Amino acid sequence: MELTNKILKLKKEKKAVILAHNYQRPEIQDIADYVGDSIELSRKAMNEKDAEIIVFSAVDFMAESAAILNPEKKVLLPTPGARCPMAQMLTVDEIKKWKAVYPLVPVVLYVNTLASTKAYADICCTSANALEVIESLNAETVLFGPDRNLAEYVQRKTGKTVIPIPEWGFCPTHLLFQPEDVQMLKLKYPDAVVMVHPECTFEMQETADFVGSTSQMCRYAKESNAKTFIVATEEGLLHRLGKDNPEKQFILAYEDAICPNMKLNTLDRLYMALKEEKYVVTVPEAIARNARKALERMFEITK
Ligand code: SF4
Image 1 (cartoon, rainbow, N blue to C red):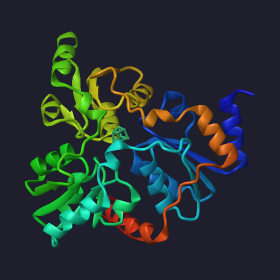
Image 2 (cartoon, rainbow, N blue to C red; image 1 turned 180 degrees about the vertical axis):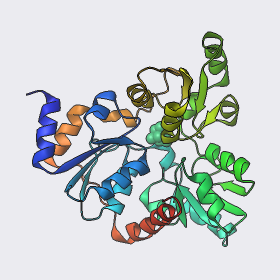
Image 3 (tube, rainbow, N blue to C red; image 1 turned 135 degrees about the vertical axis):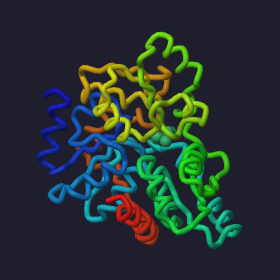
Image 4 (cartoon, protein in one colour; image 1 turned 180 degrees about the horizontal axis):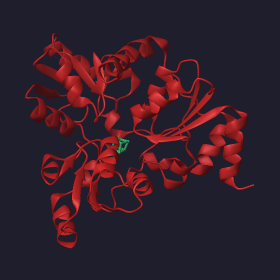
């Protein structure tokens, strides 16, 4: 039997739901029940009342969030060690260091953080709701980690003082995009609309017609009258954009913008994880309790 059919059969037998991040390989996106960003997917997981198993095809912090929000379900990550390097850039010690300097300043953590650090957050945010979350806080200064580019973007847009923790956090994949590449593509596609993720540098954001998260890019592309788009985010999103908008053309702003960690997941690994119900992602309750509060507070604000 073909691997795809084997996965679909197992999924039914085990009452499993497959969630795939926008950056997953096309064949994984095609077999998934839902494709989206990390919080869209966690919300989906919470609404899947009948599912007993969640296969979260992404990197580990996303699977951790699903486990925190769905403590009664078994959450599987197809590849152990599929870890976001940016999430690893923020440690508990780093947060404690900054909290000691600014004891009254709220800590806002991007969902791209490990559960152990989320436990120290007052509230979480995504790249889609970061502005809304910061605006909602009754504070003119916030500690924000771990992405420095997103912190600066939020500071520019809200006018608040956003202190990046650590001072140098970044996504290695989004840092690959360069304005020169966009300029070259614009010569070839002068009418193209440029969409840039806020994890890219300020200089890249300056080239954009639209700056937004992956889910916001999907919406923007659907609603826009433009026919051609230059896209600065991980290449996996182009599969979804193309499927949702077959009449439009999407060009990656840098052709090697591939997150190797996201691409560790394969159909084979997904199949084996589901078959053997392995690699179960768990978060100790002492950590999960605080991290859940930070995530739920974000959901309250961005219902
Ligand atoms: S694309 Fe960047 S932020 Fe997303 S998982 Fe990969 S390294 Fe982490």
